[in-house]
Length: 88
Image (tube, rainbow, N blue to C red; front, side, top):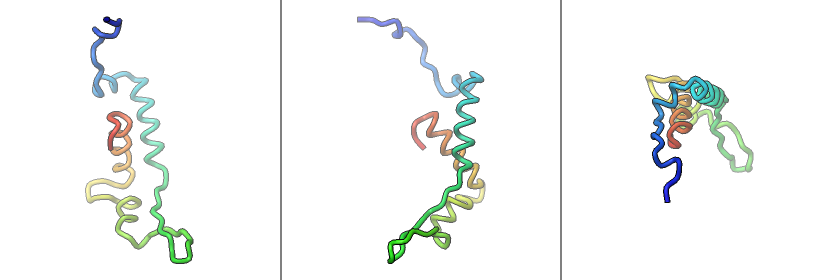
């Protein structure tokens, strides 16, 4: 049995982003989530949680993941891939 959607063209990421409404929604979501503070925590022996500022993981996630990107740029890229492709 055939449906009305069988002959519909497949819409890819590139063509979807050419629609201003799609771009605005994706941009709003990506930029806002990426700008949120990200802190890596560790739990001490006493069970208290504190920022793990001295760890490499904290530096990667909070400061800069690599020499080419700031933390904000990295998280924008990750969120963009997550929103558009479902995987980051």
